[in-house]
Image 1 (cartoon, rainbow, N blue to C red):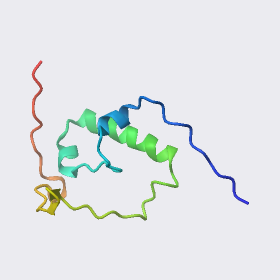
Image 2 (spheres, rainbow, N blue to C red):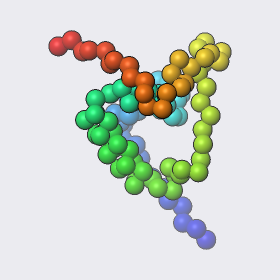
Image 3 (spheres, rainbow, N blue to C red):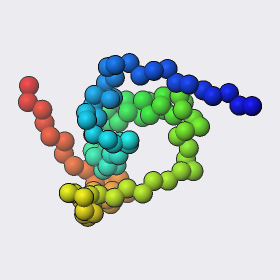
Length: 99
């Protein structure tokens, strides 16, 4: 008989839960072009965090699973303006924060 693993309860305040706000989204999908457009140091920090996530959930973040992502607006499928990452050659200048 297999044991049922139960995760610890999510605290009433979770930064990720708050970031998703009141949406019903189950996933975070980010365009590769925008990730590659961020500064090198930022990309390196993200890779470290993604590595930690993969190490924490190796059986759930499998490389043999694929996802089909479609861009929608008002419930209708629309062309993805960032769907072709141009093999890493496309860069988009990030907005500059005032302050």
